[in-house]
Length: 524
Ligand code: NOJ
Image (cartoon, rainbow, N blue to C red; front, side, top):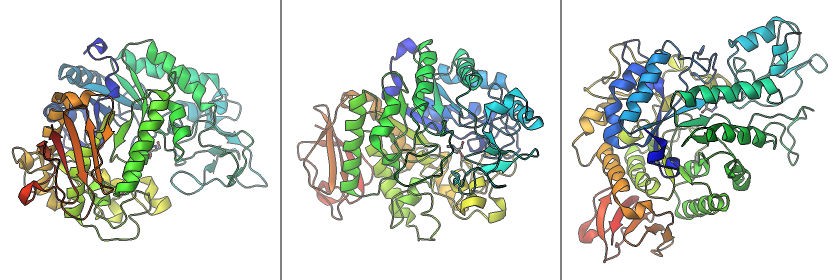
């Protein structure tokens, strides 16, 4: 696939996240792999995605499901080989699908040769690639809380402490060091040379730390979130991406302040970043409208494409979120045992699909959302593998459960063996096989929406204009002929009489009324 085919493809692409452990297993070990992805590429082609973002597939001890990388230039044997990865890139391109790989610059695996050398001797040059510090009064250098909860320092056998914002198996790199910078620029080139079209950047805002190691104090600059120096790194990465044609850098930037967020999207930095503001937004008309306006305005100010994200491998699946009384996302809101109304959650998720796929910009689909999967909240404690669980009591494994492809019972065609996490028996109605050809299924809704997204000229227009259909209704036009209407009020509403429904997320009521929690795409 040539980048010349679609300059700026990332500005409006639908990007599908493949979580390789859970997509499809080809060798019966219960863990998904590249062979499985290659065998199921047709699903993604039929769905109509523009690109795949592949969560990490590199050699890793899997202390954090692959986000602890031991070698960025190879593939973990559980997933396959580099040759298979190259074959997948080629096959995806042949199917018209671009490939994005996941790079994790904040930390590496404690098994990485750099860290092993650093541990072996305090005088090793590699020691400076990390954050080794003496303790303070016999204790760790700071009392920072890690991103998964818990402390951020572990003592090495020689007495010094090393920093890890995540698990002890993920030592943080020292981004002040030129060797670290150079190494990552070369890793980008390694993958760009293999034809990948983009890089997803993990924990993009965390790289730099205040070397004075102050405690986190309210009202003071944060010692490790969003330090200004990080932007120099992304300017350098942008120069690397610009050595090639049509390559995109996409940041994982969790940032409540939208202007700090869009700093990452300045014209000489990243091309796009995940919109977690939208993902975390409650199912509420005023809040959603404000979030959309905030997003559009902030991105327009820096000339970057907005993105629309509903789920990923770190957050509770949105069918479940939207089926709870509190629909705002937080890492802790599935700890209180609030009941979930899956029917309501599914109805809202269907409407959310039509919303996120019709707003201007690019949209992300997390594997399984096109099947309407919900969070598996019933994973027995002993089966949980997520390191967050031990530190925070919350597990992300519930959204990482292997996909159901076919058949009436687990493993639903995912593997010939035992899936690495248990699948709910109720997913028998949510397999690709069960949904294919059923016009009322989530899968066919996504397929139709993706087709229409390509075909409708309005959806290629850069702008949207709100339609005044009431405070509790999100309605907007894209171009002169197309509109999306989402009814967030508690009662059915009339659709504009001059429009014809093109696609609806649920059946219309008598008289063509749009029911609550339902969306329609209209043509004028
Ligand atoms: C963000 C990733 O999405 C998450 O899965 C991971 O645990 C952390 N970064 C650490 O790499």
